[in-house]
Amino acid sequence: MLIKRKSIEKEESSRPAKAAVKTAARKLAPEKPARYKPRFAPVTLSEQEGVRYLHFGTEWVQGAMRIRKPDWPELEYAQQMMAWMLWNAEPRHIAQLGLGTATLTKFCYKTFPEAQVTAVELNPHVIAICQGMFKLPPNDARLHVLEMDALDFVNDAANHGTFDALQVDLYDATARGPVLDSAEFYAACAACLADDGILTVNLFGDHPSYAKNIKAMKYAFAQVVSLPEVHDGNVVALAFKRAHKFDPSTLAALEARAKEIHEQTRLPAKSWVKGLAASLDS
Image 1 (cartoon, rainbow, N blue to C red):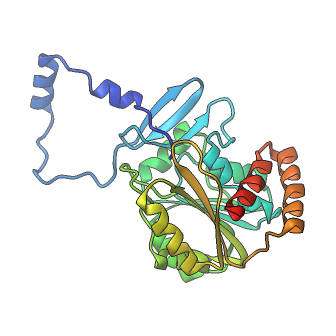
Image 2: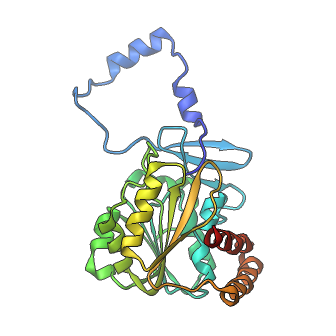
Image 3: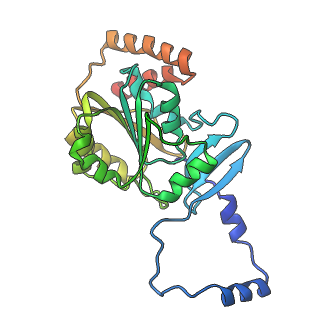
């Protein structure tokens, strides 16, 4: 989630309807209870210049897919969410909290053919639209898309110590900040990671939720660093279960690893290292 665009569906629904059509709709549609509230915001789509976007009934983008490259992370913040690759070239198990358009799930599934890939999504409509409109493969021996609450998932002792990388992108239709942001939530995320595991989180750098989330992560993790802001305020934070050195020799090794990542995947990994170095110097 990083840019604002009006969804096609929202524009269409906002156009004045003919009186006869509205009258007929009132006659045919059953009246809803006065306090009726849908559990989930409506899932809507838009397309522009070969890119399909997911919305939750608002202008906020929840994910994107270039139609001709369905497994590629189109948005820059999504690419940055893969920055844990600088430290782990052969992950055994990767988890994604918040499916979005399944961008990271699909990319990990394709890029790491030996790894288990798990995605957790509370909204069944998001899962269905990812399968129908965003090329999400069906579950198999390696891919597990679970319909459940992310908080329940990280608190499940069966998941503790099992993931090399945990990617968190948990926003609702209002986009006011991650829906899970407590120190207890991040402590549970840390518990789910292996000893050298890394968490990446999509945050809004110019929003009050940013400082709250960074503080909560620092409570739960040995080390937290952030990449430079992209798009309309997105900042990807990396949280390490075990602290890492960032001296000149380490940065040189990360640059070499970034070159490998770029050659293998075309991800702009060199910019991640530059961003990390700039963040540490500031």
